[in-house]
Length: 267
Image (cartoon, rainbow, N blue to C red; front, top):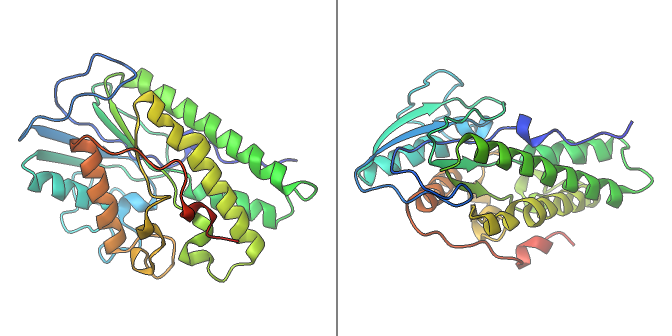
């Protein structure tokens, strides 16, 4: 039986809510938060939301309201928002789940896809798509894009005034955890992550979604960005992600690049 990618709506997604005046356009971002306003930040994610790989990870449900010393991007982003003068209330529900977003949310962030790439490359290694691996990979990219659309529509319906920020994927074929992997596996990971970024994530800018461009940022490929497992970010990596989340949440953020050399790092 042909294995299908894990549906995005069942994967980890980071969802945040922020209290400020609601926007009027359900397909556009809400206004930027007023200085010194209150931000109610709820994160729903997987291991990245708990800071796995950092020097101070926080256990799921161990601190639903906060983990003050946590080095994961959720906790660092909350600290940075407070440093900017926002009264920030954090609830971290970082477990693999569909996102449950409050209807009054005015800011939502999503970071998903890394687990999908690993599932599909694992399936390829187990013999899936043996007669047409490129076709199999393209089908999984298409499925991911469809799931992303389903997720976005769910969020738009649930929280029509939300400012939506997503993080695209880096070229996973060039990440440290695959450095010693067979070339075919690295090539598949590259094709998947680049395809997901260019097909599912980056085009969302046309729908007034803000995209943090991890694919074309050189920091995605620095060893210092990752923990010892080469997959989860290090303290430095999480700090970088947090800073970009805060910038996208509070400023007029830049658009992602449509192409870059990082998309073809694996020969």
